Image (cartoon, rainbow, N blue to C red; front, side, top):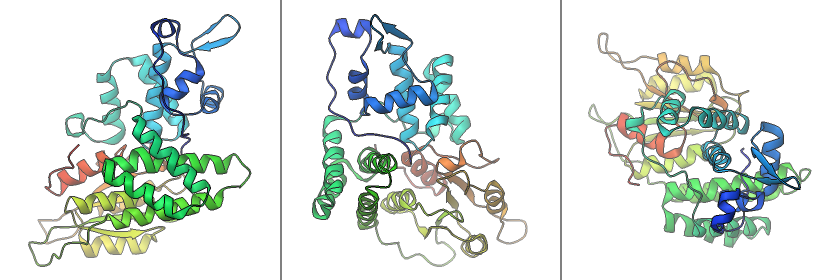
Length: 344
């Protein structure tokens, strides 16, 4: 999982501070990350301020801030920090949103005209408060409050926004706390993951009854062999159910033979393969699924393949899509299934 820390509320700097550049603390509050995370990114990936004031104080220029905002946007979409840092630097060098749109299209396979406009601004104060409240309840192992916070997030922000702006950042923050504390807090991550899964399933509508030759082909959702991270697929499954799109959810670590058999039996409109780690992402497997055919001779069909998760970074195959976020995945699958996409 990516490093995304829950920070304090942003405070608007005065004009003089804006001209001189932001301090590390002010920038951390603006982005919703910790100052430690900014220093770590500078040390590991070279994402640092271009100038230092007298006394070696860091001051982040507008260009530096833009690079960090892009970094946060890409990591929130599931890209590994090193990949996100490289893309953020390249975007800053290229300049302009048109070049960024072209890069996103090349990386995801989704044309810019088909993608929904998504804000790259930091989350609102209300969302930040939800993240902090949820994280604190999880650290206390306060299961009733965790349930209450998750329900309030979905009710207040909608399923997709609650997933992207509340659930994912809090899971990242808890995961980072565990990774940096010597295997402490692992029980916190397990408890939070369980309740996030429960909330997602609670908001997954029952599959519609469909049979006969006119039945719509479903979307098949599966983790690749060896992959245990199912929460992103559960979020996608819930989002598709709310659009009335039929799905078949197979969950974690689906064996190659079982996956191939399911594709042949179901004839799905699309197959989503999730890989959290590069070690589990198998491009030959994805190509095999994409090449699977069914139907009468002369009218063969193949599934659209979507590659989900940071494990596929740099491995997109010909004709496959790699959505960078849950809304992009929902838009692409809705278009494939002939359904209207989610409202923003």
